[in-house]
Length: 363
Image (cartoon, rainbow, N blue to C red; front, side, top):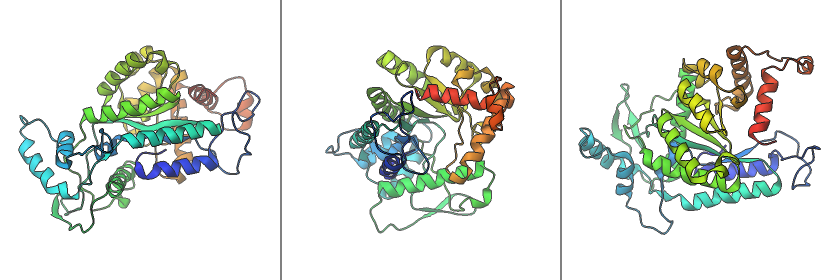
Protein backbone atom coordinates (compact mmCIF):
# COMPACT_ATOMS: atom_id res chain seq x y z
CA UNK A 1 0.00 0.00 0.00
CA UNK A 2 1.51 3.29 -1.13
CA UNK A 3 1.26 6.37 1.08
CA UNK A 4 3.79 8.92 -0.26
CA UNK A 5 5.75 9.99 -3.33
CA UNK A 6 8.66 7.61 -2.82
CA UNK A 7 6.75 4.33 -2.65
CA UNK A 8 4.25 4.59 -5.52
CA UNK A 9 6.69 3.09 -8.05
CA UNK A 10 7.77 0.40 -5.59
CA UNK A 11 4.18 -0.76 -5.16
CA UNK A 12 3.63 -0.66 -8.92
CA UNK A 13 6.72 -2.76 -9.60
CA UNK A 14 5.92 -5.33 -6.93
CA UNK A 15 2.33 -5.57 -8.13
CA UNK A 16 3.49 -6.20 -11.68
CA UNK A 17 5.34 -9.30 -10.52
CA UNK A 18 3.06 -10.42 -7.70
CA UNK A 19 -0.32 -8.80 -8.26
CA UNK A 20 -3.38 -10.88 -7.51
CA UNK A 21 -5.31 -11.51 -10.70
CA UNK A 22 -9.03 -10.94 -11.10
CA UNK A 23 -10.42 -14.37 -12.00
CA UNK A 24 -13.67 -15.46 -13.58
CA UNK A 25 -16.03 -18.05 -12.13
CA UNK A 26 -13.90 -20.88 -13.54
CA UNK A 27 -10.71 -19.66 -11.89
CA UNK A 28 -9.24 -18.26 -15.10
CA UNK A 29 -7.44 -14.95 -15.12
CA UNK A 30 -9.44 -12.17 -16.68
CA UNK A 31 -7.74 -9.95 -19.26
CA UNK A 32 -4.40 -11.66 -18.68
CA UNK A 33 -2.93 -14.89 -20.00
CA UNK A 34 0.37 -14.49 -18.24
CA UNK A 35 1.42 -17.38 -16.05
CA UNK A 36 1.32 -16.57 -12.37
CA UNK A 37 4.71 -16.08 -10.81
CA UNK A 38 5.69 -17.95 -7.69
CA UNK A 39 5.45 -16.15 -4.38
CA UNK A 40 2.89 -14.04 -2.55
CA UNK A 41 0.02 -12.31 -4.30
CA UNK A 42 -0.77 -8.71 -3.46
CA UNK A 43 -3.40 -6.12 -4.25
CA UNK A 44 -1.72 -2.85 -5.15
CA UNK A 45 -3.06 0.28 -3.45
CA UNK A 46 -2.02 3.73 -4.65
CA UNK A 47 -2.61 6.92 -2.70
CA UNK A 48 -1.32 9.76 -0.56
CA UNK A 49 -1.80 9.49 3.19
CA UNK A 50 -2.98 12.59 5.12
CA UNK A 51 0.29 12.62 7.10
CA UNK A 52 2.06 13.82 3.95
CA UNK A 53 -0.61 16.12 2.53
CA UNK A 54 1.01 19.38 3.69
CA UNK A 55 3.92 18.69 1.32
CA UNK A 56 1.53 18.91 -1.64
CA UNK A 57 -0.14 21.95 -3.15
CA UNK A 58 -3.34 21.75 -5.19
CA UNK A 59 -2.27 23.98 -8.08
CA UNK A 60 -0.75 23.04 -11.43
CA UNK A 61 2.92 22.01 -11.74
CA UNK A 62 3.85 25.26 -13.49
CA UNK A 63 2.12 27.42 -10.90
CA UNK A 64 4.41 29.48 -8.69
CA UNK A 65 3.59 28.73 -5.07
CA UNK A 66 4.82 30.88 -2.21
CA UNK A 67 6.37 28.44 0.23
CA UNK A 68 5.64 30.43 3.37
CA UNK A 69 2.11 31.21 2.25
CA UNK A 70 1.45 27.56 1.47
CA UNK A 71 2.50 26.26 4.88
CA UNK A 72 0.89 29.17 6.71
CA UNK A 73 -2.46 28.47 5.05
CA UNK A 74 -2.28 24.82 6.10
CA UNK A 75 -0.76 25.09 9.58
CA UNK A 76 -1.65 28.38 11.23
CA UNK A 77 -4.84 29.00 13.22
CA UNK A 78 -6.92 32.09 12.63
CA UNK A 79 -5.36 35.42 13.56
CA UNK A 80 -7.90 35.68 16.37
CA UNK A 81 -6.42 32.61 18.05
CA UNK A 82 -4.28 33.19 21.13
CA UNK A 83 -1.63 30.86 19.70
CA UNK A 84 -1.43 32.58 16.30
CA UNK A 85 1.59 34.79 17.08
CA UNK A 86 3.67 32.05 18.69
CA UNK A 87 2.87 29.54 15.97
CA UNK A 88 3.62 32.05 13.23
CA UNK A 89 7.02 32.66 14.84
CA UNK A 90 7.68 28.94 15.09
CA UNK A 91 6.75 28.44 11.44
CA UNK A 92 9.23 31.12 10.39
CA UNK A 93 11.94 29.32 12.38
CA UNK A 94 11.43 25.92 10.77
CA UNK A 95 10.51 27.19 7.30
CA UNK A 96 14.09 26.86 5.93
CA UNK A 97 13.99 23.15 6.78
CA UNK A 98 10.65 22.52 5.08
CA UNK A 99 10.73 21.51 1.40
CA UNK A 100 9.18 23.43 -1.43
CA UNK A 101 5.67 21.99 -1.83
CA UNK A 102 5.01 20.06 -5.02
CA UNK A 103 1.87 19.87 -7.14
CA UNK A 104 -0.47 16.98 -6.47
CA UNK A 105 -1.85 17.02 -10.02
CA UNK A 106 0.92 14.96 -11.68
CA UNK A 107 0.80 12.60 -8.71
CA UNK A 108 -2.89 11.96 -9.33
CA UNK A 109 -2.07 11.30 -12.99
CA UNK A 110 0.61 8.85 -11.90
CA UNK A 111 -1.93 7.09 -9.66
CA UNK A 112 -4.30 6.85 -12.62
CA UNK A 113 -1.57 5.39 -14.83
CA UNK A 114 -0.55 2.77 -12.27
CA UNK A 115 -4.15 1.78 -11.54
CA UNK A 116 -5.11 1.50 -15.21
CA UNK A 117 -2.01 -0.56 -15.98
CA UNK A 118 -2.92 -2.93 -13.15
CA UNK A 119 -6.47 -3.22 -14.47
CA UNK A 120 -5.19 -3.99 -17.97
CA UNK A 121 -3.03 -6.78 -16.54
CA UNK A 122 -6.13 -8.14 -14.84
CA UNK A 123 -4.69 -7.36 -11.40
CA UNK A 124 -6.79 -6.19 -8.49
CA UNK A 125 -6.08 -2.60 -7.45
CA UNK A 126 -7.35 -0.05 -4.92
CA UNK A 127 -6.94 3.56 -3.87
CA UNK A 128 -5.30 3.86 -0.46
CA UNK A 129 -4.23 4.69 2.05
CA UNK A 130 -6.08 8.01 1.90
CA UNK A 131 -8.21 9.89 4.38
CA UNK A 132 -8.48 12.43 7.19
CA UNK A 133 -6.51 12.75 10.42
CA UNK A 134 -7.05 15.34 13.16
CA UNK A 135 -4.52 13.74 15.50
CA UNK A 136 -1.33 13.85 13.42
CA UNK A 137 1.25 16.54 14.17
CA UNK A 138 4.14 17.33 11.86
CA UNK A 139 7.56 16.41 13.32
CA UNK A 140 10.23 19.08 13.64
CA UNK A 141 12.38 19.09 10.50
CA UNK A 142 16.11 19.26 11.30
CA UNK A 143 15.65 19.69 15.04
CA UNK A 144 17.15 17.85 17.97
CA UNK A 145 15.24 17.10 21.14
CA UNK A 146 16.52 17.32 24.68
CA UNK A 147 15.62 14.89 27.44
CA UNK A 148 12.45 16.84 28.19
CA UNK A 149 11.21 16.34 24.63
CA UNK A 150 11.42 20.01 23.69
CA UNK A 151 13.30 21.21 20.62
CA UNK A 152 16.49 23.00 21.56
CA UNK A 153 18.52 23.68 18.48
CA UNK A 154 18.29 23.74 14.74
CA UNK A 155 20.64 21.50 12.83
CA UNK A 156 22.48 23.22 10.04
CA UNK A 157 21.18 22.03 6.70
CA UNK A 158 23.65 22.06 3.87
CA UNK A 159 21.31 20.58 1.30
CA UNK A 160 18.01 21.89 0.03
CA UNK A 161 15.27 20.08 1.99
CA UNK A 162 13.37 17.63 -0.19
CA UNK A 163 9.88 16.17 -0.09
CA UNK A 164 11.40 12.68 0.08
CA UNK A 165 13.44 13.59 3.17
CA UNK A 166 10.40 15.14 4.83
CA UNK A 167 8.33 12.04 4.06
CA UNK A 168 11.01 9.81 5.56
CA UNK A 169 11.04 11.90 8.75
CA UNK A 170 7.26 11.67 9.03
CA UNK A 171 7.19 7.94 8.29
CA UNK A 172 9.82 7.28 10.95
CA UNK A 173 7.80 9.28 13.44
CA UNK A 174 4.68 7.29 12.55
CA UNK A 175 6.52 3.99 12.87
CA UNK A 176 7.70 5.01 16.32
CA UNK A 177 4.10 5.70 17.30
CA UNK A 178 3.21 2.20 16.13
CA UNK A 179 6.09 0.72 18.12
CA UNK A 180 4.76 2.51 21.20
CA UNK A 181 1.29 1.12 20.55
CA UNK A 182 2.74 -2.36 20.18
CA UNK A 183 4.37 -2.01 23.61
CA UNK A 184 7.93 -1.90 22.32
CA UNK A 185 9.06 1.46 23.78
CA UNK A 186 12.71 0.43 23.70
CA UNK A 187 12.64 0.92 19.92
CA UNK A 188 11.47 4.53 20.11
CA UNK A 189 14.00 7.13 19.05
CA UNK A 190 14.98 9.63 21.74
CA UNK A 191 15.17 12.40 19.17
CA UNK A 192 11.49 12.27 18.26
CA UNK A 193 9.78 15.63 18.56
CA UNK A 194 6.57 17.05 17.17
CA UNK A 195 5.49 20.55 16.24
CA UNK A 196 2.02 21.83 17.17
CA UNK A 197 1.15 21.94 13.46
CA UNK A 198 -1.70 19.82 12.15
CA UNK A 199 -2.58 20.02 8.43
CA UNK A 200 -5.86 21.87 7.98
CA UNK A 201 -8.96 19.78 7.46
CA UNK A 202 -9.84 21.77 4.32
CA UNK A 203 -6.54 20.82 2.71
CA UNK A 204 -6.89 17.18 3.72
CA UNK A 205 -10.43 17.01 2.36
CA UNK A 206 -9.41 18.56 -0.96
CA UNK A 207 -6.68 15.96 -1.44
CA UNK A 208 -8.96 13.13 -0.33
CA UNK A 209 -11.65 14.18 -2.78
CA UNK A 210 -9.24 14.23 -5.72
CA UNK A 211 -8.15 10.69 -4.94
CA UNK A 212 -11.65 9.35 -4.35
CA UNK A 213 -12.82 10.98 -7.57
CA UNK A 214 -10.24 8.76 -9.26
CA UNK A 215 -11.65 5.71 -7.46
CA UNK A 216 -15.10 6.51 -8.84
CA UNK A 217 -13.70 7.12 -12.31
CA UNK A 218 -11.99 3.72 -12.38
CA UNK A 219 -14.53 1.83 -10.28
CA UNK A 220 -12.01 0.65 -7.67
CA UNK A 221 -12.23 0.39 -3.89
CA UNK A 222 -10.77 2.64 -1.22
CA UNK A 223 -8.88 2.09 2.04
CA UNK A 224 -9.94 5.05 4.18
CA UNK A 225 -7.94 6.45 7.09
CA UNK A 226 -10.11 8.32 9.63
CA UNK A 227 -8.49 9.29 12.93
CA UNK A 228 -10.32 11.60 15.33
CA UNK A 229 -12.19 12.74 12.24
CA UNK A 230 -15.50 10.89 12.47
CA UNK A 231 -17.58 14.03 11.92
CA UNK A 232 -15.57 15.44 8.98
CA UNK A 233 -15.39 11.98 7.41
CA UNK A 234 -19.15 11.47 7.55
CA UNK A 235 -19.78 14.99 6.25
CA UNK A 236 -17.38 14.33 3.38
CA UNK A 237 -18.97 10.97 2.52
CA UNK A 238 -22.45 12.51 2.48
CA UNK A 239 -21.31 15.25 0.13
CA UNK A 240 -19.36 12.79 -2.00
CA UNK A 241 -22.41 10.53 -2.31
CA UNK A 242 -24.49 13.51 -3.40
CA UNK A 243 -21.82 14.39 -5.96
CA UNK A 244 -21.47 10.94 -7.54
CA UNK A 245 -24.63 9.06 -6.55
CA UNK A 246 -24.77 5.41 -7.62
CA UNK A 247 -21.42 5.74 -9.38
CA UNK A 248 -20.00 5.88 -5.86
CA UNK A 249 -22.30 3.66 -3.80
CA UNK A 250 -22.69 0.90 -6.43
CA UNK A 251 -19.17 0.78 -7.89
CA UNK A 252 -16.79 1.72 -5.07
CA UNK A 253 -16.55 0.00 -1.69
CA UNK A 254 -14.84 1.85 1.17
CA UNK A 255 -13.11 0.22 4.13
CA UNK A 256 -12.69 2.40 7.21
CA UNK A 257 -9.50 0.76 8.36
CA UNK A 258 -8.98 0.02 12.05
CA UNK A 259 -12.55 1.31 12.56
CA UNK A 260 -11.38 4.91 12.69
CA UNK A 261 -12.43 5.36 16.33
CA UNK A 262 -16.07 5.78 15.34
CA UNK A 263 -18.91 5.61 17.85
CA UNK A 264 -21.46 2.81 17.66
CA UNK A 265 -24.29 5.24 16.93
CA UNK A 266 -22.45 6.94 14.08
CA UNK A 267 -21.44 3.67 12.48
CA UNK A 268 -24.93 2.15 12.62
CA UNK A 269 -26.33 5.33 11.06
CA UNK A 270 -23.61 5.35 8.39
CA UNK A 271 -24.44 1.76 7.41
CA UNK A 272 -28.00 2.85 6.61
CA UNK A 273 -26.84 5.57 4.23
CA UNK A 274 -23.75 3.93 2.73
CA UNK A 275 -24.29 0.34 1.55
CA UNK A 276 -20.67 0.35 0.34
CA UNK A 277 -19.07 1.09 3.73
CA UNK A 278 -17.07 -1.58 5.58
CA UNK A 279 -14.86 -1.56 8.67
CA UNK A 280 -11.80 -3.62 9.58
CA UNK A 281 -10.79 -3.87 13.25
CA UNK A 282 -7.14 -4.40 14.19
CA UNK A 283 -5.52 -5.32 17.48
CA UNK A 284 -2.82 -2.65 17.26
CA UNK A 285 -5.19 0.30 16.86
CA UNK A 286 -8.83 -0.73 17.38
CA UNK A 287 -7.89 -2.87 20.36
CA UNK A 288 -6.85 0.20 22.33
CA UNK A 289 -10.31 1.78 22.08
CA UNK A 290 -12.86 0.53 24.63
CA UNK A 291 -15.78 1.23 22.30
CA UNK A 292 -14.54 -1.12 19.57
CA UNK A 293 -16.01 -4.39 20.98
CA UNK A 294 -19.42 -2.71 21.07
CA UNK A 295 -18.87 -1.45 17.53
CA UNK A 296 -17.99 -4.95 16.33
CA UNK A 297 -21.16 -6.35 17.91
CA UNK A 298 -23.37 -3.60 16.51
CA UNK A 299 -22.02 -3.61 12.96
CA UNK A 300 -23.81 -5.47 10.20
CA UNK A 301 -21.95 -8.82 10.17
CA UNK A 302 -21.64 -8.60 6.39
CA UNK A 303 -19.68 -5.33 6.68
CA UNK A 304 -16.84 -6.67 8.85
CA UNK A 305 -13.33 -7.15 7.48
CA UNK A 306 -10.06 -7.68 9.36
CA UNK A 307 -6.51 -6.31 9.23
CA UNK A 308 -3.16 -6.14 11.00
CA UNK A 309 -2.53 -2.37 10.65
CA UNK A 310 1.19 -2.85 11.17
CA UNK A 311 4.14 -1.89 9.00
CA UNK A 312 6.09 -4.90 10.33
CA UNK A 313 5.66 -7.63 7.74
CA UNK A 314 6.76 -10.34 10.17
CA UNK A 315 3.84 -9.44 12.44
CA UNK A 316 1.14 -9.30 9.77
CA UNK A 317 -0.17 -12.86 9.87
CA UNK A 318 -0.31 -13.23 13.65
CA UNK A 319 -2.01 -9.86 14.05
CA UNK A 320 -4.63 -10.62 11.41
CA UNK A 321 -5.35 -13.90 13.18
CA UNK A 322 -5.48 -12.21 16.59
CA UNK A 323 -8.01 -9.70 15.25
CA UNK A 324 -10.00 -12.55 13.69
CA UNK A 325 -10.21 -14.35 17.04
CA UNK A 326 -11.16 -11.09 18.74
CA UNK A 327 -14.01 -10.49 16.28
CA UNK A 328 -15.24 -14.04 16.81
CA UNK A 329 -15.32 -13.60 20.58
CA UNK A 330 -17.11 -10.26 20.32
CA UNK A 331 -19.75 -11.73 18.00
CA UNK A 332 -19.98 -15.17 19.59
CA UNK A 333 -18.93 -16.84 16.35
CA UNK A 334 -17.22 -20.17 15.96
CA UNK A 335 -13.49 -20.06 15.16
CA UNK A 336 -12.40 -22.45 12.39
CA UNK A 337 -8.90 -23.65 13.23
CA UNK A 338 -8.50 -26.72 10.98
CA UNK A 339 -9.50 -27.81 7.48
CA UNK A 340 -12.09 -30.10 9.03
CA UNK A 341 -13.72 -27.08 10.69
CA UNK A 342 -14.13 -25.48 7.27
CA UNK A 343 -16.20 -28.43 6.07
CA UNK A 344 -18.83 -28.10 8.80
CA UNK A 345 -22.16 -26.48 8.05
CA UNK A 346 -21.86 -24.10 10.99
CA UNK A 347 -20.18 -21.10 9.38
CA UNK A 348 -17.60 -19.47 11.62
CA UNK A 349 -15.59 -16.27 11.64
CA UNK A 350 -13.06 -17.34 8.99
CA UNK A 351 -15.65 -18.09 6.33
CA UNK A 352 -17.72 -15.06 7.27
CA UNK A 353 -14.75 -12.72 6.86
CA UNK A 354 -13.73 -14.47 3.65
CA UNK A 355 -17.23 -14.01 2.25
CA UNK A 356 -17.22 -10.34 3.27
CA UNK A 357 -13.83 -9.81 1.64
CA UNK A 358 -14.99 -11.42 -1.60
CA UNK A 359 -18.06 -9.20 -1.60
CA UNK A 360 -15.98 -6.11 -0.79
CA UNK A 361 -13.61 -6.84 -3.69
CA UNK A 362 -16.40 -8.02 -6.00
CA UNK A 363 -14.69 -11.39 -6.47
